Length: 561
Image 1: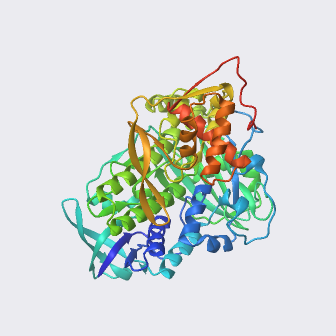
Image 2 (image 1 turned 60 degrees about the horizontal axis):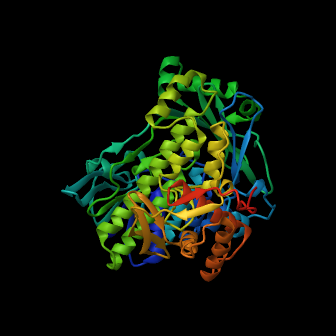
Image 3 (image 1 turned 90 degrees about the vertical axis):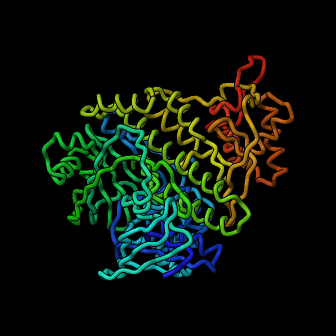
C-alpha cells in the first residue's frame, strides 16, 4: 500500500491531523491505521476552550455539538485548604454568566469561550468518522507490527490489517505517530524522554450511571469537579444525561504502601469525599474499573526526517489542569500544517519542524511544571506533605504565588498562534487566579500597581516564528531574547507599535493601544481591553517591558474586576 501520509492511531490526535490535511489539500492520500475498533472508552474527557476553534476548523464542531455533550463552563475545586465547605470556582465566562440557549447551538458568541465534557467512546468515533468522510482511508483493528527505517528516516510500516495474521507493507512520504502512550515511532527511532518532575502518580477510574450532576446551568451546562482528599484527588466529570466519569489520582508510592487493591483504594476515596459520595449515592458503577500510571514526560524531539509525533506520543502532562486532549489536538493541528507547508515547498522544512518542536515541547513542559507547583501548594495532602516539598524543590519553585507566576510567564507566555496572551492552553488571567488562590497569597497585577512602562530590548534581536493560519505556515517577525519570544502579531504587534510613540505613561499608552487596534481593524471592546492589559502584563512578566510607579502620575483606572 502506498500513500502520502500514514497516521498511526485514530484517536483525536490522529483524526485531527487527517482532517486538517484533507480540509486544505483534498488531493493528499491519507491513511489512518487504528489498532482498536471504535467506539471504545478512553480517559481524558475534559476539554479546554482553546480546542473548540480546532474542532471548528476541522469542520466537526457541529457534529460534536449535536452529540449533546455537557457544555463545560469551568471547574470547581476543593484544593489547598482543609475546609470541606470551601470550594473555588474557575469560570471560562466572565463571572460565570452563561445565557441559556437552545441546543444544538452554533459556534458563536459565548460558545466560543466554553467547551465540552466528552464521552470519549462517542467523541473519538465522531472525529474518526469525520476524517473518513473527508477522504482519509481509515483502517480499524489494524496494528503496526514493525517499522523499517534508514537512519532517521522511516522507509515503511509492516501492518496487520483487520486483525489478520498476514501483514502488508505501507509506504508513505510522511509518517505521523498518534499512537498515544504506545509511542510506536518515538521508540522505534530511539527518541528519549524528559521527565522534569517528581510526580509519579497512578490513576484509577470507573464510569457511573445516574450519578447526580453537581451543578446544572442553562441547557446542558455544568462544571468539572476536582476534590482533593488527604492523599490524592478525585475527578467528577459528567459526560451526558446519565453517564459520569469518576477517577482518583494518588502517588504510586502511597498506593504501594497502602497494600490495598485499586478497587479498595478507589471506593475508599469516594467514600471519604462528602460531596462525591453524596452525588453517587443513587448511582451505579459500570464495573469497568481501570488503572494506569500517570507520569508526566515530554519527548526530547518531536519530529525527524519524514516523521512527526502527535498527541500523547509527544508528551503527557498531569491531568490536574485538564489540558491533555487540548494540547494534543492543538499540537496535531500544527503537525498537519507543517506537512501542508512542506508540500507547498516555499518554507525550509527544517525550520518548519523546529518551530513545531519548540512550541509543542514548551507548552507541554509549562503544564508539567505548573502541575508540580499546584500539587506542592496543597495543604490537604498530609500523607504527601514531604513529597510535595520535594516536588517544589525539584521544579525549582517556592510556594510563593508571585514567583510561581513569574516562572510560568518566563516559559513563553505569548502564544505565536494568534498573538494573544496564552501559555499552551491557559490565559494569563487564569494563571493569576490559580497562583493567587493556591499560593495563599495575592498575585497583584503590575499594570494596575504601576503607571510608567518602558521598552527593554537589551540583547533582543529580530527573528521569525511560525504563524499557523488558513492552511498555511508563514514566517512572522518577532523579537527574541534566548528562548523568550515577542511575536509581532495581533495585540502584541499593536502594543509594540504603541511604544514607538515614545509614550511611557499608562493612560497615554492605553490611548495608543486603541489607536493601533483601530489601524489593524481589530474591534475595540471590553474583552479586547482586557486582552491588551493581559498582553502588557505578560510582557512585563517576561522582562520585555519595565514597569515603575511615579506618585505624580495617575494609575490605570479601567479594566479592574
